[in-house]
Length: 208
Image 1 (cartoon, rainbow, N blue to C red):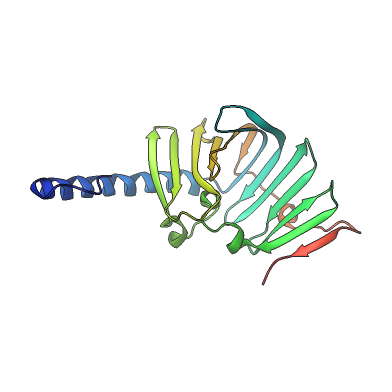
Image 2: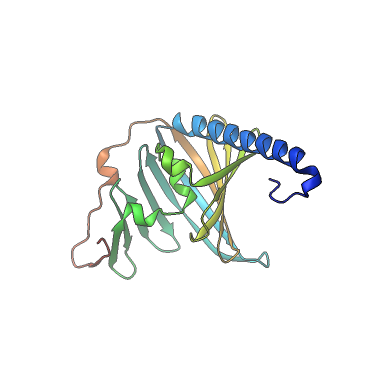
């Protein structure tokens, strides 16, 4: 978008800004339509974290389950066993290696995080992000605020549903996530999004 123009071309600049703004609004509407048809999603995932020099610094794999609105279960099986659960009110992170559970309010956890759009229907939340459609299958989501850990999220669709994600964080690292064995709009038990704290685990409750 053009943000600074010389006075001589001011009128043309205003016209270009308006056209660009309308295009971004259309892109947001297109993405919202695609995601709103995704009532639930479950898949296996493989994750590769790449630093600014292009080196792979971390790899992981596991499963994901999510349901609209605002429910997510992200279970990492390799290299360490962890479970992250968003139940609509709180986010629970269960680390089996250190035997600790961290809990925080979901509103606090997803603030300025474009991942929230995967499960949110809230118009006010959507207005916090800039959305650009890169091609027929790919969208880039950027946070308007500059305070989040994830600066941009690229979503790719294939065969009628979500196929991959690329997250760019504030340190310049990219997290590339590919989904396999995808299932769309299948019934997922509500128990999937209920955190069970293992006996003896330390609980760090950060909810205010």
